[in-house]
Length: 371
Image: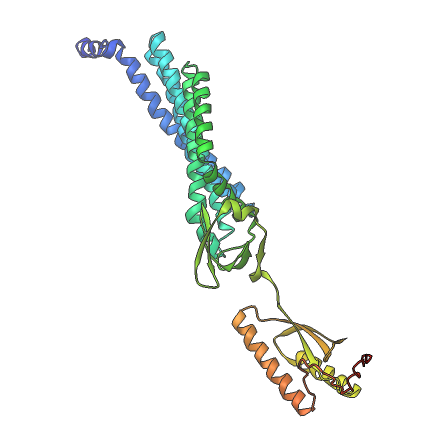
């Protein structure tokens, strides 16, 4: 029996890297326990939290739980592993290094959680635009850019936090970054203004892709909303790129969002039209506009005694928002007005001018005195 214990005793007396073998075994056992404990904590926490998410109507908490559970597992694993390192009994210098490394690991873990949470929030925000064509522009251009910008900021802050915990003076580094950032901001101020302009456009939604808008001297449909500019196809067929910083500040007339299209014109009847004829003309116009399926509302009134005609003001609002359909409805109304006015013998006036010529006897010449 003693002969069997001797080799075991010698084996336990081994000191890899100057540390007893039993300490290495205890550290290995702590890692196994850390892995098992992290799995148990994740299983229990995930099960409890997912039950709570079923009681809510939003998907945000569900996505946050799916995101946070792996982070909790790594946090538990790091914590137990840190406690297991005490078995190795490192010296003061190595202990300080290990502390700094674990602080850096925790900082990286928090940074990863923040970056993933930012992606989740941006994804939820982008889902609000799924029904529109501009939503595809938002997902392909703006959201990836915002995500990269947030990740860069989180990485910079995490790096500065790690350096500060390691004992480095980051004051001079921040001063240098401030001066460099100021130079970069001045050089890229227009680009940054365009990015913030695109964010304003996507948030306020004064227009979306496919809308016909009037901005400055341009009139056309929006083809694309990018990070730098908005692309407009004018009615002439040309393409105009307008920087988003200008679009965010401009007065935009969104023609596509009008509920109806207004048409206003004046019908001129000759002066010899009788009073009954004027009443019949008003009745005909109101009947035509009231019966047409494409007319939302209408106003018809005898407006004025013009120099050469009796003027009837006609205003109506068409339901057809597509301009070609609007023109077709106008043509139908014009044909009907012409047909019924001819049937009622109502005569349209045209500009006339009456010139009165009178024949008068020229004055007699003045007779001079005879010398």
